[in-house]
Length: 368
Image 1 (cartoon, one colour):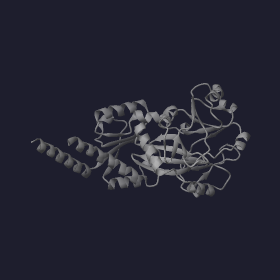
Image 2: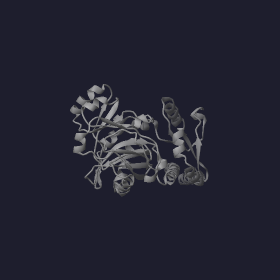
Image 3: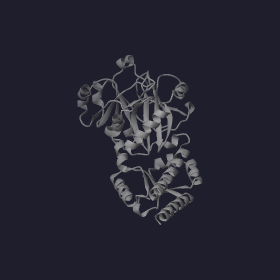
Image 4: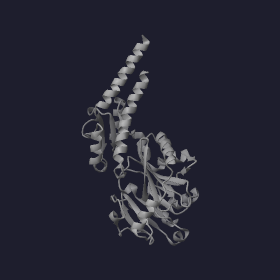
């Protein structure tokens, strides 16, 4: 009799799983207008429809609990009221997968804690070593920065970043400080990171569940001892949004002040800081730069997914100049600009379907 009941339960779950994949997977989304435009592109929406996925906008003027039903809730909004509404919704609807938990996301919005899991992980395997750069948090008096840097033993030049990441353009600005005196010119609260020469190339590792995609980007150029000795002051580099897929699309902006050996270009939401070479040469340099080992990135991503409790984020990684296997994670971003990643539509829709499939497999296992 017990075996018959058990078999019936299995059959019920299997039937439920079949029905689940015959019906539409409803993904509610609460995103800023900028994120909607960059992420919910026509190609993604078309592919999603063909796979039985429907994206439904959440009405922020109505209680979240009155909307739905949803299979998945996708969000990137800020504010205490939204976080509370989302937490209440999660308690009331545990069957809905929320991407991602608000508390886990908040961890990345403060650079004091953003890289802590990378530092604690102390990652190394046969393919390389991954570290976080040494950093120092300054919350108040800028005049105290030189002494604090000396006590911490940080080595100039230093990269200065705003402490809080709040979605504004200002929170993504950075500055390069070359000497002790100029440190007093920085705005607090901030994080100071030791600058690591890395060939002027940044690797953006986009993570969507278990899938990863790596793209190369321009970054700050190396600073030699000779250049460092000749430079003084603080050089500020705002982050400006501008899509460009090739050298021909890049937009030179001569108005940005900086050291004489730097020129700045505007490419795919990242500033390019290049030595005085042609832009075409710089693009060729990026394309030829060897990517970090795939297995290293997969293992690192797996560890950080678990530690951060997130499914959707990206890592900004650099390779130390002169080394083949020493890497640094210098920034982590939640729900980054996936719209700029080649074939992101397939990566994302496959991930959404895998979440639903995993849920029903869990139900099946529970019935056994």
